[in-house]
Image (cartoon, rainbow, N blue to C red; front, top):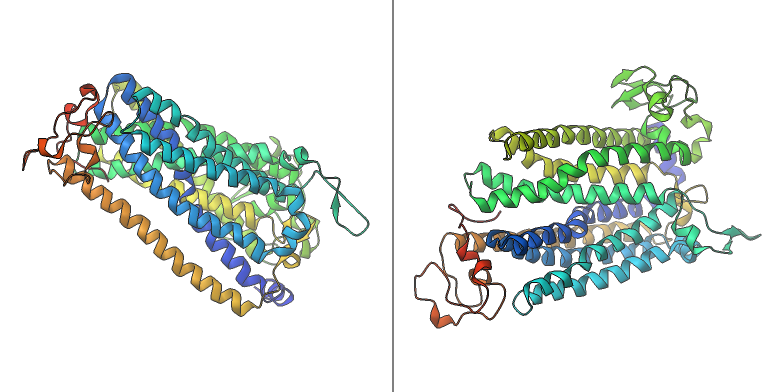
Length: 505
């Protein structure tokens, strides 16, 4: 605590509110990023199944997920734009000095955002106006646009972790910039694929978790079964893959950012036969309080041998490494991430074994309880991953080239705290609106599935998604179905098995 107090006293007054504001906006934005990156792919998987098998239930799910995708994208525009402005407003010295080196990543992300907006608009527009397979193939680039956006952001972040692609002149200014080297840094590959797998895995568990809740509430129809199975299968396949990707990125951090690795594993002194601590707290004198100590394991995990030397935090001056409090935070987030990932592997294995044995979902309610919690747990791992990445790099904003205190804005701390309060209020309103809109759509869809006929123009799921709409007069008052259409009847939602207790969550 004394070390943290001294560090805060020696830092600019505006550093604390700037860091808190950036942490809040980034931590909030990351909540919807998995859906932004992975929901287009999951939706198209369901859409392809619908067209290939003439499955009206799958088509209904794809249409509804596309609507949620559009609402989520609108929220992402707001939160992502705020983050973009904050880089220039809160850290002007970093952007002024290094923007020409790593700024390409932000440019790629902006173009990807624009392209994704256009493709989402075409996809939504095409439900009623395009031929089925034409509509599907026009949407195929959508997941790639989402991945391109992730490429830009991770390119910028990995450069901040392992900066390269430039030389410094006599005054310390970067020159002779190599764009290729600046983008493809040593940490780019491990960080990008780890991030992408995390987004797809998280989105799969979140979407499946919603239908697991519906299943637990008694909605055990084909609609909920299919809505659960497709995204959960995507997540279950990626869970063991992500475990190995996570192990690889930890090993890369060991080689490329030894101080961050030392913080994640709370290693104080450099040496071999280093023990692994599960949780625990690092004190300012280097001792560890609490936690479970496993002898030699940290050295073995770093280099597959107990004789592997692990660099400790004391290998660099105190001003160049995370504090004991920051190291403890990084250690806890790293351990939480690893623990949840291990549990998710067991859940994926449970699902795989039962599916291979019975070709069906597990029947026990405990499985669906675990599946419902998996969505929340996977979001927590994403948050923990970003905390590990960002806090573990402290005190550097550009690793070993620029400190956070040297990059922060000269704006007075009081103004930043006021800005922080305004941003919190705006984000609460934005996310409240997002939740409200999704719940409103959910209730409307549930009424449609239970046989309610909405007014014309308010229930697009009651008729065929391809071809002209039926005339309003064709729908008799109080009828539970839809009128005729010149579209393909095999793909009409009301020609497939209707959910017995209805609704999407």
